[in-house]
Image (cartoon, rainbow, N blue to C red):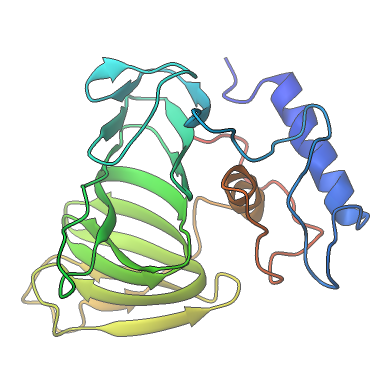
Length: 242
């Protein structure tokens, strides 16, 4: 069974049509948030966290439905050949198959940068509201200020694409090794390596496994407009969310 139904794909293609014709443009060069056109993705209403899911999706080890709420302190997991698209406060995510994300409660300390989420395993696309925060994987820490980020975790490395915005990259075990990325449209991708014996632990990487339509979708679900750098001619390059 396809991960995107015919109705879902039609909905997304209509959204792309509106973007390409400028029907959603609010300022020159930018695409605006979808409002109330029937069948088009729009900001999730209060009391709703999950936009779409397929396969084995669990929140706090319980099977999730479209009515399941996801809050700070929760753990979200996907099984093999599964995915979930969801919003926590004003942050939005696509967690692909065989993944685990956790959302820690904020630490009440002015000297500690809060963690938006931990990607304990798997692959995730995220768009985060503008604030100083960080993302943690088993082998990397990504400090961000309102950014679109795609990540993949493996035992020997983490993959990080700063889709737009500013990100400070570092290995989890050595914050003294850092690189700051300022991206407008998938400008720089990096591998952050686990092995402390490797000299260059932050290395260039290719662009993989995510696209602008997914970014547009989850920014819309969070009630925001993607940055001007996301083109109106955005095309779907991935057939699945898994």
